[in-house]
Amino acid sequence: MKLYTGMFIIRPTLTEEGYKAVVAEILKIFTDNASQIKEIKEWGMKDMAYEIEDFRKGYYVLFTVDATPEAVAEYNRVSNIREDIIRHIIVKD
Image (cartoon, rainbow, N blue to C red; front, side):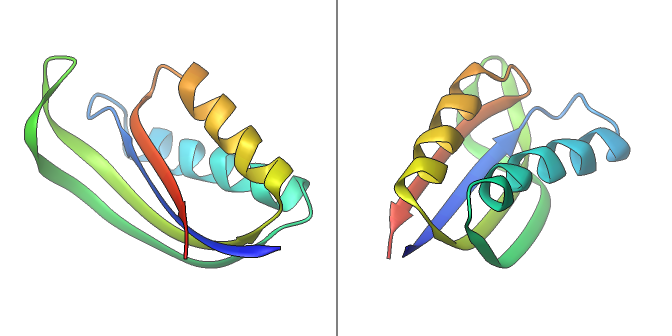
């Protein structure tokens, strides 16, 4: 396993419970794939540098994980499919 830092931005149209549900579902990808979540920082609603899909704000979540390659691949796959995530990234530390 290697240490990764990731971030995703959730659409601003969800409720507070919706944000928590999306965060839990995304982080469950790592726990289901034999990875350990080290840190989660929910930055909350922030202005974006530029407009994405007609949104000027987004709910930011930053996380650090010890992850397997399978977990990283699944995170990227799911984040690309989900309509409530408008941007995501994960990089190896």
